[in-house]
Length: 345
Image (tube, rainbow, N blue to C red; front, side):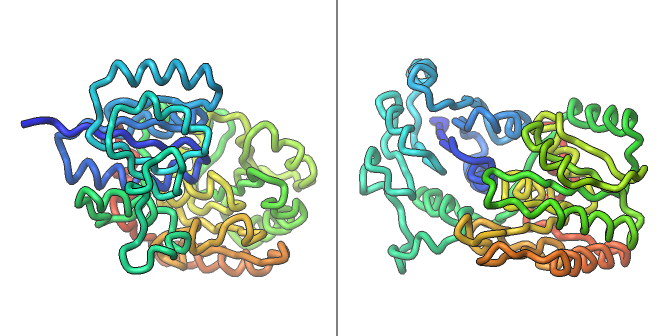
């Protein structure tokens, strides 16, 4: 029997790439003997290195010479039966020469893709923009009779990530339970004000027994300085971790409070109760890019058109999660448990 060969393309933001993980799982479930390759933004490739559904991962950069080198690698691979453009910018059009497949499915209406393979909802094709990002990827898979039975995003971790977390905990003295406050964002207008994180931290220290980890990347250290945090043995920092080690840290947290940015989606993927702060709906409507079919107690969003997200509103949702956890309640994943998503591929 001929082995099916699929190529999935996801070359944009972190959330864009993670939204494709339910599709990868369901594709492998429908075709268990298939070979599935992934082209993914180079910055996020480590998030997929232990994914058991994938055979080959191609890190992607949009520079023409990097595209050429990748194209040569693709030409050396057998022809794919189907290519699915889960999400890509227009610059990926330069890669079409190297894509030995027909059809090339997409949902974004790329001009370099044949219009007959630009999929839309059957009943109301004009409303594809009102589908959640995970659903839009699933539309393409339906073309080969793959249904999205479980919509939970997922990440997989290996022993390296577990060791890195234990080393970090030993070095810093961090103990569970802890909450992570992700203070950065991909753009300035997505940032929750430093004063708000300061006020929230003080409430957490006063009203709960949780430790607090402030996280982000090195570029966001200036935001950390602006917080002027109190001197406390319960406050820790994580600003120099690799993305996969940071993801594992988030998987171990009791709660994540995050701006509408990549790590928020990691929280959803690892089933950590996550409060998503959407400062401006123009940067992404929560119903389209926020939690998808997740428990609203454990995965709430706070959004305001004018960017005035109050500390009181975030704290209210924080307390709801904290109290439910204290009573022994846990979020129920839509597909695949948190423990399963941490198994080594």
